[in-house]
Length: 131
Image (cartoon, rainbow, N blue to C red; front, top):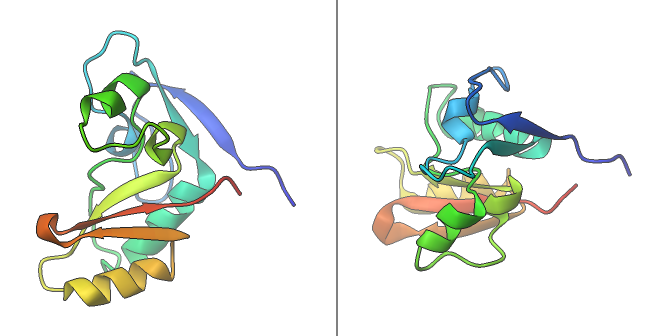
């Protein structure tokens, strides 16, 4: 088994991380002074790229949350203390407007290891374990 490709990127640096995703799209969106970096896991980027291809027909989309620092995660009342967002292993992905939610879930399940649907909010939390 190969080791996971994991990088730490300074929060102030906006760079291209993959073919279609920039650092600013996956970094923590908080304003805490001690939130200074993003954990970037290659498997998460690969899943985001595949999601773009198989769900969004290669059209742009922005995940709601990917990496979240510990403080930002704690601010969210329903977020788990063991959230995989804190490790760069998760993404909250909005359902495309014209796709039935059940189809959206089924397609995500072919890309991510775990999919938690939030139909009332029209998104799914998707995550992986460390490869």
